[in-house]
Length: 381
Image 1 (tube, rainbow, N blue to C red):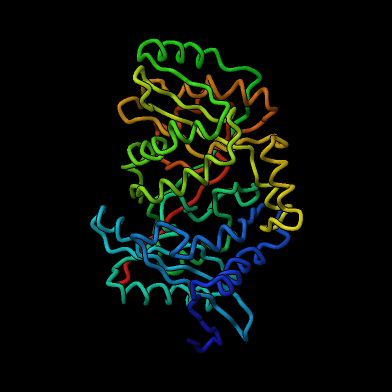
Image 2 (image 1 turned 30 degrees about the vertical axis):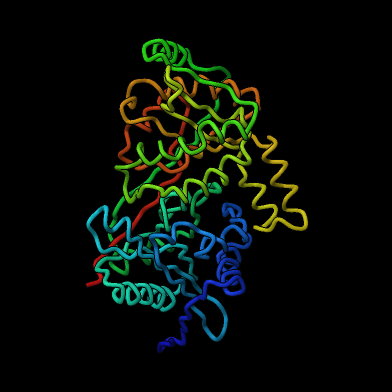
């Protein structure tokens, strides 16, 4: 499909050869950019293969690439998340994994492809960037372009925002991110609150020395709690049993157990948890998205603790315990381990700008809000 600007839009088939080209374009576009963190190519490819990604149980999608004179100049993925549309009573086509050179004709052609595909699916609105599920990176960066990203977030150039506004997109939701300084000791306020909360609600923080036992005891419970705690967040759709099994293996297989905390009640039922990992951003940059021949070494070295930054990947508290100080108990356990492991900074990853319950947990830390990202939307009737 060509237009007058000599831009050709080609649909991408869900096969490895074509998906590798699609993923690689997203990496090559940021060559030399010191703030971009590439994904692992094989992992990113699997995201778009229905047999590999259980989100395809309720999603359908089509990816596109833009070419000029045979040279790739942009990419985008269109997604219809039927579960989200049913939950929120909408007819949205999502766009994600959007990257492009700074060229109006390229951008227009990419979004036209998604809008036309969405209309054929019966959709009336386009929103994004969003993924197949809430576990995928979401939100276009609009502040913090000079900050290195994390493995769980999107990086994009500043000109993306200008193109979105030019195309008539409006703000749907904003997420903010914080970088906290890890203190020399746990703040006294945290310790006092943690002690009160532990006694008042008869809570426990069991320690694990075996990933296998942690997965057996609370692997499924952790993601069931995510479904419960995140239920009312923007765009969130409950994870299916097949997705939970998928993410249990993905997240719990490589954890440093001292960077994980689970909180249980007197009946051993899960009340809250925090999963954090040493930052893999520099390691992913060093391996440029590839495990071989030496990428595995950089990643293994980072996982074993050769990083001064810790990423807070997943934190959730059971709704009936939210706002009651349980977060203080969580960090009264994690902070001494962060200090012992030599972490100097902690990355919050994305939080909805209006989520006061989450942001209150950082109030006793030296911190700065260093990135902001946005989901955009517009009608396509």
